[in-house]
Each structure stands twice: as structure tokens, then as C-alpha cells.
Length: 356
Image 1: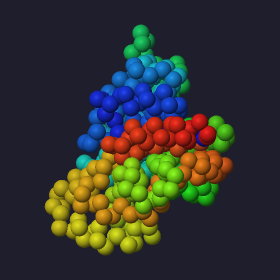
Image 2 (image 1 turned 30 degrees about the horizontal axis):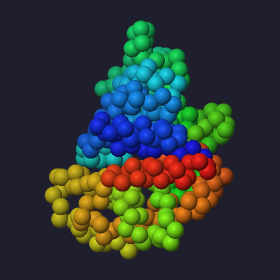
Image 3 (image 1 turned 90 degrees about the vertical axis):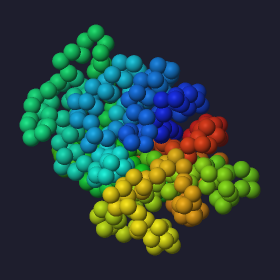
Image 4 (image 1 turned 60 degrees about the horizontal axis):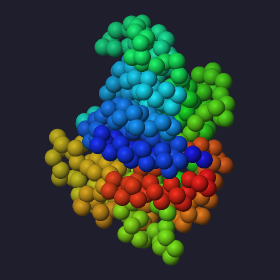
């Protein structure tokens, strides 16, 4: 199994990607959330200049905020800087759109977007739908090194549910997920992906298709348990982001939270009930996948961390990764909390990567 790193894009911290390359991480996925982090393509350009072997790309770019030709041109520019190791992860904007007070792009629009994006990534002509008009478009000046379409740019489609994962099967060279670290869940993910491929008439080979899931890893010291304050410090932001996501699903669609949140749900929703309704979208994702704000510390329980992250001794972590790999997961990308990110990068790089 490959281990990649998901990066909260930061133009002042490219050394983090450099160190990931040195430690043997296979991919650096730079996240695209415009109102919380640096611009991912600016950070990717800097990373391309300072690295030479690690695969770099978006983790993931947001379709709803960037028209397909803009996305294609942006990633093809990175491909000119890092030929043969550039990829594009793309999703509808579960965080980026909600932080701006909007829902993610609709599935039908995402399908149309991907249909145009795929040929554009090859430098070919596509039908682009924009502001009620459809036009044939292509990059008309790919010469002289402005962009690079000669080296393939793999397209990895992000999906959390049946419809989006079906589109990953229809359009993608791989699927990007955020699933509980449970090997049995992979069976259901493959079913959704392959159904999308089959329904679209696509010939599909698992061996030529990348599956990657987002979580984080904490390697325990001898005698240390999941109750350790270090575990909460390193994995708390990832665990808390799952509550943020569940709250958006509850607020916008009326969907109940999963059983892992039953104990804290009433308290959490009560905390937000009096917040300014015009600005609640700014509050929900405070600290998103970087840190846990003080008033939310009480919601990050060991039970929640265990349900969303991989915590264990080195041998236990390796065993869980092997189980996931046996069920068809090719890569795990880790996104540790921001302040201890280098410590986590080093520990996983030294204790886990050489053994998987």
C-alpha cells in the first residue's frame, strides 16, 4: 500500500512536502479550500520546483468554484513543472462551498463537468457548458511550454456516496474517498464504483484504477493508549471534521448523524443553535482539519477518534493497512493536525512506510 499525505495548502510551508518526499510518501495531495488555506495551485507550483520524485496534485480541487477549462489549464501548468508526476483530484466542494454558504455542486452538473474535463486534460476539444451556453473549447496554445498535455494527468474523482462514487467509476482513473478505516467498507465502495462504470458502458479493470482514502495515523508508544493526550493532539482535528460534515448534512438535508455521534449530538447542536444564522457557515468549519477550537474539545472523544482514524502500535497499524489493501484500497493519505504535522510525518515515515 502507498502512503500519501494530504496537505492544508500553505505557500510558506513547502518544506513539509519536501520532507514527505524524503521519507518515501508516494503522493502529496494539496487541498483546495479557498477561504481557509492558501491557493492550492500556487502551493503546487512551489512544491513542483522543490521536489523531483513525489507525485503532486490537488486533494481535491473544487469543480463548483473553477470552470473545467480553468481547472484543466491550471493542472496542465503544474504538469509542465512536474511532468509525469502530476495528478488531478476533483470533487464537488463539500467543505469549500459550504464555507461560502452554499451547497456542493449537484451531481448532474458534476457529471457534465467531468465529461468536459476529461478530454481537456488530454489537450483535446470538449463541449463546455457555461452560463446557459455550450461551446466547443480546447487549449489553443499548448506549445512553447505554457502547459503540458503530453504526459498523462490522471483524474481522481472524489466521492462520499453512491452517486458521486458512480461518477468516479464512469469518469475517473481512480476514486478519492473518506471512509471509516474498516476493511469491510471497501467492498461497498467498490460496488458503487463498478456500478458507475458498468452503467456507463465503460470497461473496467481494478488493477488500473487507484483507490485512496483520507484519514490520519497515530503510532502509539509502548504502553500508550488511545486515551493519550498526544493522540487527541495529533488526530483530533480529523475526528472533529467528521462532526462538521455530519452537522452540514443534518442542517442542509435533515440527515441524522451516525451512531458514533449519538452521545454528543444534542450537546453539539445545542451549542450552535443560537449562532448568527447569516454566518453559521463560517462557524461550522472553524479549525477545519487543522486544530480543534476550545469550545469543541469536549466532543473529541476516544470513541470518535477510533471510528475515524487509525491508532495503534506500529504492528497494529501495519496489520490494519494490510487488511485495507487486501480489500482493494491502494493508498491511504494522512492529514494530521496542523501543529504536530511534522512529528506525525516523521513517525509514520519511519515506523510504517518501510513495512507497507
